Amino acid sequence: MKEFLLASINTVRIYMIITFLWILYNSKGRFQKYFPLLLVLVVGLINEFCLSYLAYTKVDSGLNTSIYVVLHNVIWLWIFYKSFHRPYILKAIILYAVFSLINLFFIEGTTNFNYYPFLAGAFLYVLLFLVESLRMLHNESILNMHGSTYLMLCAPLLFFLGFSLLFGFRDKAIFQTVVFGSTTLFSIISLFVNLVYYSLINYCVSSPKIEPHER
Image (cartoon, rainbow, N blue to C red; front, side, top):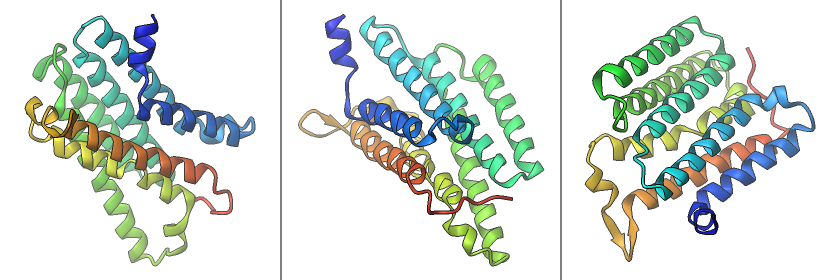
């Protein structure tokens, strides 16, 4: 058990726990306000625990990670929908969820990590972000561009883009490419994008002076 706990500790996981506790502290009992972000963290922490356990027991984590990716992407797409209330966004979420299920059972399968749902979800999120940003610029909604909700929606962008660069090649050898010492390319990108990801969430939660974007 001691070896399992020690193997489970890393910088990203510690920062995820800190972010989760920070959101709880700032919610001051109003969990509904921050529920989507808490859900992102809960799903992420459960995934990390499962990854640690599967690695410890030497069991493949492809299915676990595939499920996490779909849940993570759907939550963020739902956050995006709730921020703008565009019917086409809701339709896009449903199509994405259906595609992910079809891919899991009939295309990439349940025994390997599913690359397509991550890439499709990342592309969809970035595309929606660009469309709504251009819409706000066209409508000269400059104040909305500085809202905490808009900043929150920026949080996963680098996460999606960074991992898309890795997953886009669908080559596990790239993940294991050693950059220096025993540090791999995957470790560097994962650390960087996750630190930016959770730092933006922390900043949004701790910045009440910034008015959220609402529609």
